[in-house]
Image (tube, rainbow, N blue to C red; front, side, top):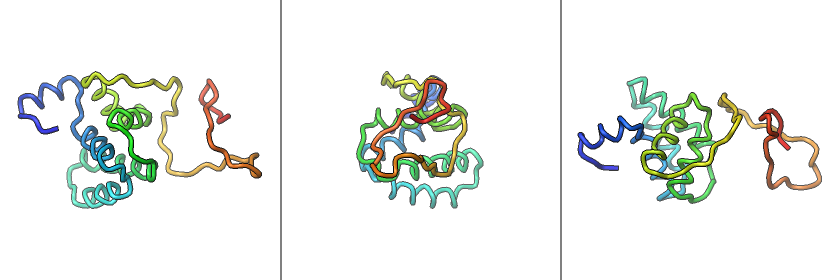
Length: 143
């Protein structure tokens, strides 16, 4: 979002995260998480400031996780960022930015508070393709 400096400061004081909304806007426009991942990787290597490095590292992990996810709306991408662990820059940025923009998001009670880089293999459905799964109410099991 291109705005004047004083308006940007006002939005940021309310919780608006320009970097998160730029990432989500680019995903909403292109739907190409793979291309954006490569751009974020290049930016990560050029960035010298720790806040930018932290954001880029989270953005790279987020983009890798959502590779091939298709074309979603800005609100849907903000929803996806808000589902990251609460301590993450993306989660805080997505949630607070959606509030500033007046875009309601669905909350996830008991969502995991740790990021993971691995892939989990679910066992017990070798004969059929599993098309969906859900977390148990306590957030500890996939059902």
